[in-house]
Image (spheres, rainbow, N blue to C red):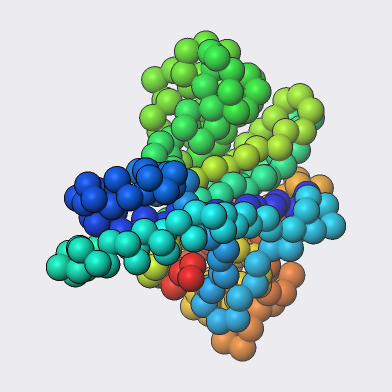
Amino acid sequence: MPAPNWQISVHVGVFQAILSSSWRLQKILRLLDLRVPSDPKHVQKKTKKVVDTPLHLWNSFATHGNIQIQNNMRTKTLLAAAAMLAAGFASSMAQSNVYSLNVVGYVNYTFVGGGLFTATANPLNTSSNTLAGIFGTGSPLTGLPAGSQVQKWDYTLQDFVPYTKTPVGSGWGANAAVPIVPGQAVFVKITGASYTNTYVGEVLQGNLTNATLANFNFIGNLVPDSGTATQVGLVPAAGAQVQKWSTSLQDFVLSSKTPIGWSGAGEPSFAPGDGFFLKNNAAYNWVRNFTVQ
């Protein structure tokens, strides 16, 4: 399967309480011709990813270019200067400063064409985790080409429910708001040429849980990192199965969890955006502790 790549940038909101409440500081900054963005989305800093132990990020340098991180040194200098200016007459507000850290980015993932199927999972969180929000609208046509089919797994039915995109309106009719949340997998069928889908959104952080039940669950990683099942924290009970879809074979490849490891195809590995079946004998919580520092 073509290798996904992903890019991140870090949005930092600092000193907002001080900056918004001090007209003196605003005046000084205007005199210095320093423009402080009111929206912290314009502030970026170099980042280092830390995820569980050890860290394994997808390296797609050979095919797509490595992870790209932008660094705005002028903005960082400006924030530092603003902090020092504010300290002289706003120290009483120091306890109320708010520091926020959000990571946004994208994952490119190729869906094979020719009427073949690709298993994929949404690896990023957006403001609209729906069919139309993730895979685009019909008019204007965005995202998946018209005629594409998305098949979502219904756990209760233990079967797939298909949705076909049209070039009209939302593209999905009354099903436009069907949820496609992070960590939830679907099948995508492209009738024409292969299509590179771009997932865009926020990287989830903190203690994350993808709750699965007994029987078949069609799932994916909640965050866009890569590695073996052990490296991404997927350690189900003995007797569980991971069934990964092979786009070349158009069939599942089976790995079974044993008390000492994995049998069948061996320990599975995952790339950002991969979807797969996890079959449990009992409920299992796939827990991640994922942070960006």
